Amino acid sequence: MRKVIEETENPMALWIELRFQLGNHYSEEPRDDVISRFYQYAKWCFFDSKSSDVVNAVACAFYEHIPEDKILRDDLHRWLSVSDFTALKDVFQYLKHPSQFHEFKKEFLAKRQIALLSNRKQKRKT
Image (cartoon, one colour):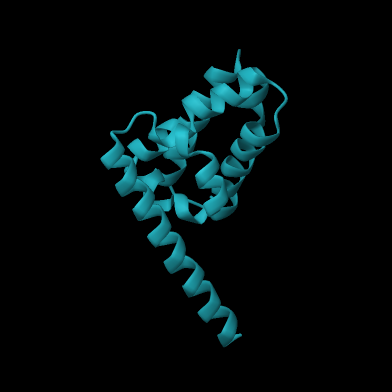
């Protein structure tokens, strides 16, 4: 995605394109290493960028739309910690009715818990 990042005119356009590319990646043969890089870059931009334009762009053009995309929403628990999810709460609920956000949060936390339990079981076997 280096070429896309370097050639995009502004942060908002970049994050619109990156969210689109992430969705396309899932429709092909998704690889965890590639998906991880999208989320790592988004996390860095949101939490560590010194530019309010970058923070706003990743919030509005990327994170805000994840709950609207079933594929991304269903897989989000693998890429965000509970503390990151909590920090992004206002962003995630922006386009949602409070009851919809409550369901989204409940779904995320349940999947996250199941994944943690599964990882612990696998570690015990090895």
